[in-house]
Image 1 (cartoon, each protein chain N blue to C red):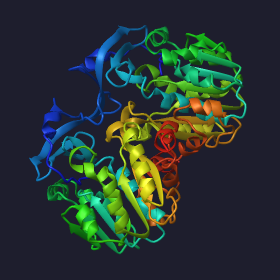
Image 2: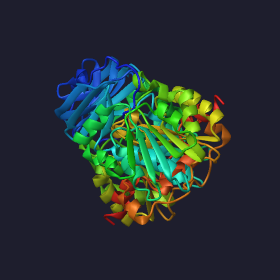
Image 3: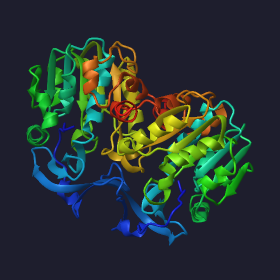
Image 4: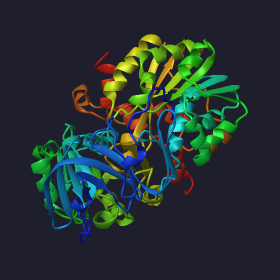
Length: 301
Length: 301
């Protein structure tokens, strides 16, 4: 994650360190917190946009925290990166041009680069600070920047999309939570802007929060997207260090049916490198528990 | 959960309360902890077998903790209870006699009782203390005891099964973790005892720990069970207040193929009451992430 585009909030990552443990207490998940034991703090500073904390954990590798919220641990990041990238990319029969909004750590770039048919990978990350700490402390993610097809723009994704209409086959928005800086990424105008930047047959896939915590937030967003895009779907992945242990994805299409069945499969060589995604799991990730299916797709529609 | 059958460990639930938060720090998930904010402690005592703590949380309802490990929160318990019960029960075409080992809180009984064809529900819970606190503080689970088909035995499930061979259609083992009291429930002799207590066509479903934490424990167990049972499978459910946000189930059959497809569907009336299980999710719950599928079923077989 890493996209943000407003004034910094007051939250400071080191305030959440007590007795050598980082406690992820946030207003989006009241009454609960994931804690990770810290070996040592590697970096802590305020970037132009947000509070940036990197620590070496006891059991989860290096951990990136923005405004007090865990964005990446080296131990389980593959689940998120693989699913947010490969669901739209394998749902598309032949993606050539891919845009990433946010995703400054580089992990999503790493996954996109596994698709040999992709010709152009563009990333718009607002915060150079996230790119810098990731290159220093999260090399297994930041290696995504090494692919020669990658172009980096340190700028607002919305502005970039205005300048590049009807261009991309897949747009992936790898954002932080809809409170504070990344709030606008969860609003209808941003989904309209992505729609305009897609060419016909294109797919967007965005970080869609957690069904266990935020169906109230997800439901109106899915409804609104459904009125703009040809189809809209919701998938999820398990990831222990995100709040409640899961995170979802909202997938919208432009002139294409829904994305719960892959159009292509990974080659055997690529599948061997993947640790989470499989074509079977692609389909299974759209099958929601009864409570979430009802709340997101039935009750309020 | 709630089955245990050895001497108490030294762990005390209230040792884990710091500044009004319960921190679930355990040796089975080093370096990480789920924390829940406490409104007030409702009960804390040592039963004959274990340390029993019940507290009212700020956002998760009442919470039962045994030997320092969260067993149930009223907010998310339905995911676990529904999946551990309905996967084997709907996989079986006509279950008549069902045995629960552990499960003293009554939540699994509540789910079994939704199956109108079931004639006999037997529970063997070792610890009367768990039954008592659940009836007092977890009435939405303990109402499972109210069904007239339920018989309660406060005794060791292994002893009960020796006395009841070739009898049950479904056996569900709703145990705590394989460290301390419930350790024997994760060993081959216990799986042999369950196999003997099943009649032909029977199914066992046991708490199978977390794929994100314990593939090293799951893999040899699945392999061992595969040598005793006709088929063995592994499914999982998401549940925010269990370590890493998921828990798995090991499903073995006696003279029957694998259980990833339901034999029956819930009636519309029953489906309306279910908050997690659906027939589609039954199938999806057996689809594992690449790393777990490899570690449990491929690499070591």
